[in-house]
Image 1 (cartoon, rainbow, N blue to C red):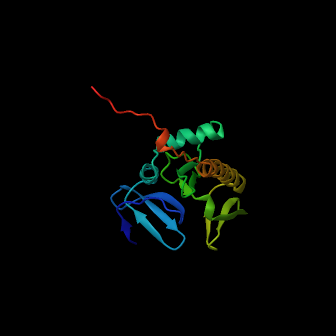
Image 2 (cartoon, rainbow, N blue to C red):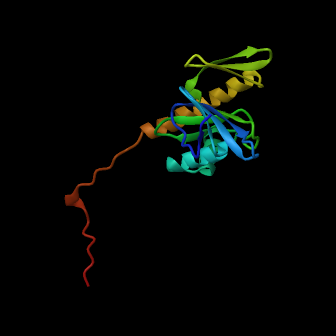
Image 3 (spheres, rainbow, N blue to C red):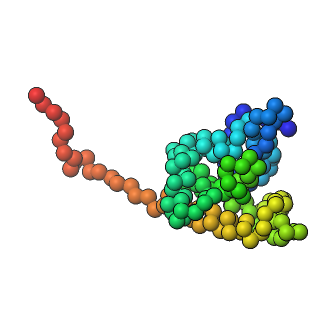
Length: 173
């Protein structure tokens, strides 16, 4: 499998999860709608650099999520509000095996032997060791955050200043 040196989260990402390479270095298995590959960065590094790329930071995105959603734990993160990319974790971000999902690509989650079977819009599935009700709650919270942050991005204002009414700011000595 091809290894990318770095990755910025794109709208095509379905999910990503942490792994270790043969030398014990953290890396990430990324699954997009049409390809799966390994990135030579941890999932949190990918999210960190992706939020920086969008003009924010991982810490700022986490603080904003907690503030908007009322101080919840394991909160979803708005990676890029312009591209409407939000990801949410299945576990605490500190766990290496946490799976980060993009809610946009999820069609539904069903129960399969007490685990959550995730059905994606591209007709692929993923079985994860989590109760479907817990997964669906996280999915709904992520969709709520996405609606809140993308709605803020839509409601922007543009101010146009009339150059004839500008104050003279030249300084003369």
